[in-house]
Length: 131
Length: 196
Picture 1 (cartoon, one colour):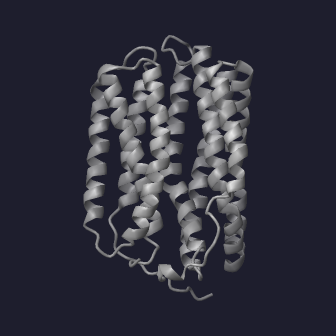
Picture 2 (cartoon, rainbow over the protein chains, first blue to last red; picture 1 turned 120 degrees about the vertical axis):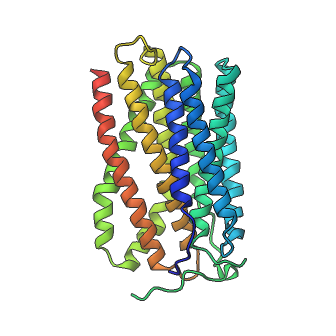
Picture 3 (spheres, rainbow over the protein chains, first blue to last red; picture 1 turned 90 degrees about the vertical axis):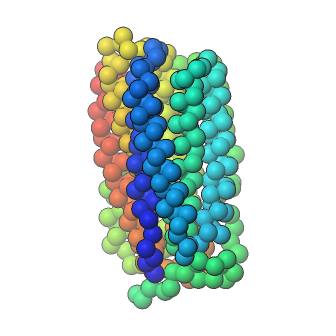
């Protein structure tokens, strides 16, 4: 097993997903009332910041099996887009609207990006660099 | 056993079948279709069935993998571990998301129907705590467990899988399953408290 120095993509991705989970649970805890959105917005900002940092760090990696990364990322993203589409439909079906819908949609997008990213990174880090 | 080099030319990959067992898809589709019908129709018995059966399988599999399969696997010779992993991981990659979806989808709808989701319900706090535990399990499963599962399957498709890579990933998989297994004990406490 050859070890390459790689950024802490898994840790940052897990932290980003944890912020999304906290935001969703915080809002769900107030159902059927509407939660004050301040804390949820803070969670979204933290999650998005960590995802952006993750993407930035990953984009600077040169010795990496990008061919395999994009292969897994594409299929993973497709699968999770289907899941996200169904979840978004349930939001609309439940007549969620306004800032709450925007926040839930952003959280869903963060989730949909993080999961395939972590799958693709974990698979690609053990693969040949050249396709 | 000496480790082979993990980085191999992708062109040498032997032609194997699909990573996921495709024949498992029809029964899974039937299970998920049943879940959709139960939720759409607010069919209480079916929702309870999906939630209890899914939850029991999820909890049992997590505890069994984390605390029974894991220690056995660590004691096996590396070739045996590889052979076990080759057969075990594709099945886990289709079984676990299905039982998790069954449990959470039916559980949320049951909580809605029973009124436990409402802030005015005396058991609302338990539901929120259970969401916290599930959130933590979801992060562990989606960030650690599932990617390790997939990476092992890709490694096993190489002409010469690297035992060290498989060991590393399987250790991560089994530890993550152990953590979610321990969290499942918390879920058992919460759920029995909710139901009593």
